[in-house]
Length: 91
Image (tube, rainbow, N blue to C red):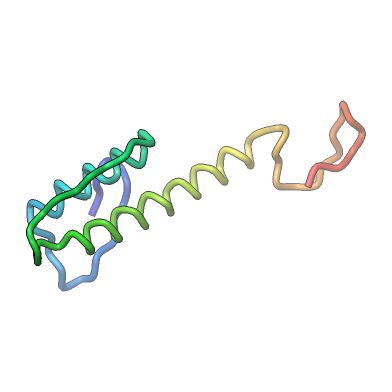
């Protein structure tokens, strides 16, 4: 299920409540903007599932984007090409 442009994976049998979807949107937004978030919801409303699913999805997306950025950056290339300026291998 895409939320804020990030694919959040949930168990097949689980259909999130509207309040859980809203909480996941707010969690992903807070993580993306590096903000603190205080979430309050009644017992049994699915806070734990919303927090874990959205946090894990954001982290997976962050790691993927970071890896892509590092692999295209001339300073942080993932391959072992010789640096023409420094004459060294970049690892």
